[in-house]
Image (tube, rainbow, N blue to C red):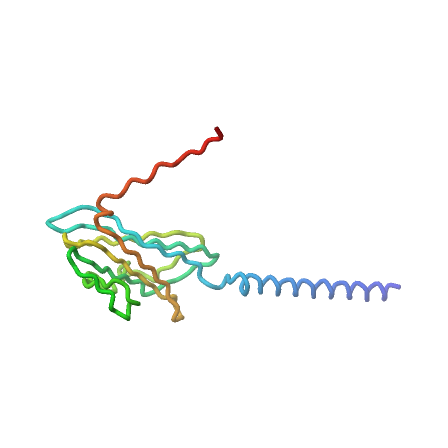
Length: 187
């Protein structure tokens, strides 16, 4: 009787261990296969703020916002930006195939400039954190539009993340007031 009880307890123990291993395997497939937890979940946004006028130049603040919405620290490298200007009176040119026939900004004020000093260590974003980086520069008085393009690389891969946003200088100088909220009533 004791031997039969021992055999049954071994069978139950082995069955439970098998179920636990299978459960762990299914959880891993779900988290890293279906839920894609191993991939970066970085939200990347750009903005621009007008500071003021100095000696015939507009001083602006370029803003990059990175938010890691994932569950693991993410490292980035070669994080650069280009600042392109479109001046008042300039003709529209949509003939450039390399930029997918978008409006060509002929004045490249800044090209492949780093958001952070190159002497800094590797940039990283911890899980569920948001970081804002700024860069202050001056642009000519006759600027009509500003286009900010930025990208960074993920280490040890060829994958990159990019963002682009275009601003009208006049709108930055005198922002439009937001529309009043309309309140609905039951009457």
